Length: 165
Image (cartoon, rainbow, N blue to C red; front, top):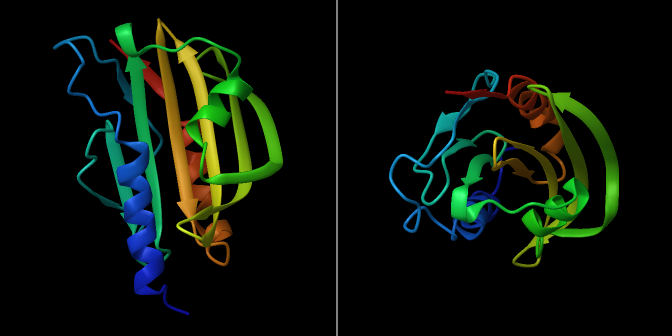
């Protein structure tokens, strides 16, 4: 079943919504450099708008968004609260799953939720971690029927997370 044009548009809208904080107010040279694990076939880089990086998978109508917030944009707090802030307005109810892990020598948290975007059901996966006065987050959004197909790519991206100098 191919994704509907509305589902694809909603995923693109989501990317714009979560990236709206932008990088306009970041000082040059203050952004953290980081890498993620390789994504599987079908993921296409796209204009990240205000994020560091983003990809879209047309076959899944799914997006993956990755960002670092450093220096003046760094927000400290408990990982669960940071995930709630990241997914506010999209994730609905309690997480479907939650996994604490270590990424690049730091605590990280990955959670999954049912959600909605503009009244259309989605599933959401997100990871947050902190290192060197930066908050790193990776967000995955897909239609519920296609979510599991891209989850392995999201996990591979997260597991390959490393902060560079």
